[in-house]
Image (cartoon, rainbow, N blue to C red):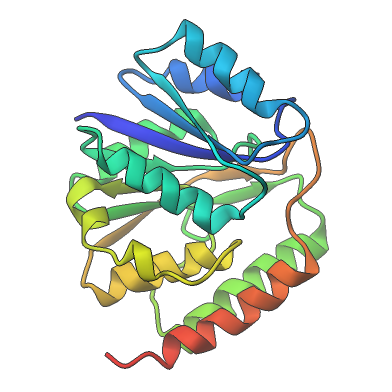
Length: 233
């Protein structure tokens, strides 16, 4: 098993050192940071760590803030050019625990992709205000009702893909950005007949910096499930 994790960053200078230290503690894990020219110097922090850990850390610098979806797609193309057998994705804000990655990798032995889920038995959310909890729970019910996906946590960005599963997805044709990208990727995977497993995680609200959730992100997330459901099979 040769795992690689993709971590998109934008203004995560305060969180990135701790995250990288924790990721480097996961045996054999390689790390791909995809930075969108963060004005706070996140890219320089990533480069510093990469210079000291060239065998395990790579940094992809992109010009300007181009969005979460394109960050992941660009990162996935880079990852697929390596010999990685498993490609993970996670947030940079310490809301996802790197210590959970081995559990996702273990579950990938029986599934094509694995989701770190807040909404299965033993899954938890910590330090979120009630309105965020209600919005997230409603969003997942809304998405499942419209798309008919059976995934419990459609909006989780903590995932692990078997290489051959990711190669089957139409990355070049994905139109969504922001958090809607995560939903569209899961939808394409289920439409392709890929097997999904969900393992419980404890999701923790970011420690430093501002949330990337905005009004436009919410609007796009509300529209995208209808577009996906209208696709011909």
